[in-house]
Length: 75
Image (cartoon, rainbow, N blue to C red; front, side):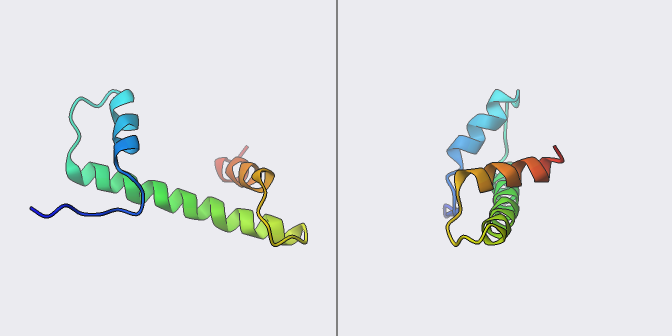
């Protein structure tokens, strides 16, 4: 079976699943986790871009990322 490549490494996400109590994790679950993380990251990035533009900047700052995360969490 050919190994699939993903845009981000699977191993750190595998460790998160293991740390959360999963004793066995299927390959499809690992790939679903990668997809979910990418979707969340994309949402954060899009909001951070909006925040930096609103501030009149082209550069995204750490504060933009942190605020985007807080907003998406509903805090």
